[in-house]
Length: 269
Image 1: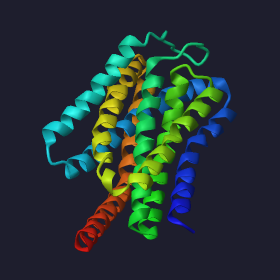
Image 2 (image 1 turned 120 degrees about the horizontal axis):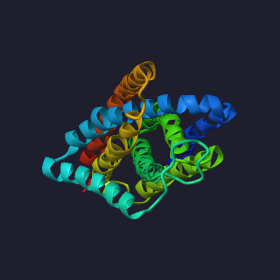
Image 3 (image 1 turned 135 degrees about the vertical axis):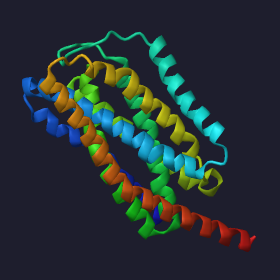
Image 4 (image 1 turned 90 degrees about the vertical axis):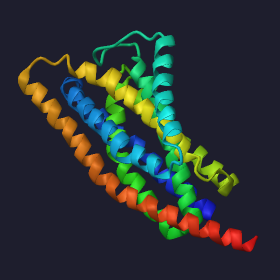
């Protein structure tokens, strides 16, 4: 099987994680109404863990200029603020709302960028070796499953219908194919592009968590429910931390392999 086939099959498997939300379609709406605040709390924890324990450490490690890197994070944050400021959506506070909160649009943009980067990483890993490619695919998939559950919850919270949340989440996942195709077309010439997009995605996710999701959670006044939200938030952090440990080590393997490949290329020239 050619590298191209291996890459696109792997990306398809990872993208299919977005349909995990189909299982939530089977839940009754009154149960889903009670579950949404906990799932949103889990999403906050997942976003924060993804930003500070996965995305930023990886970006910092590869960056030659931390000032530029964190400027890109600020840029991602401000881009999200500006987009939300000028896109006037009506706010929604329950599942029956027919309008879409800006946080859903922000999440889709950030998730699309994140999936684009996943496609880059998977394709680049397969260019190093099939074993590294498979290992990276497994790591990304394990990372995506809990993240996609959280994304679906955020889209529901934002006012999307369950059907539309599933469709748009899947469309967002397809950007991984664009990232993979880009790497396959101009692979080594675009080496490191993910480390430009990573901090921008971090800024976008940080805006979503801090500006839209956390303030919504503060509306809960019952002590028991507030405690459950805190527990759910920590669960999101712990789960993403645990899963990204393996993904981080796989990325190191990919980077080492890439450096070796580049060394061979220089000797050839």
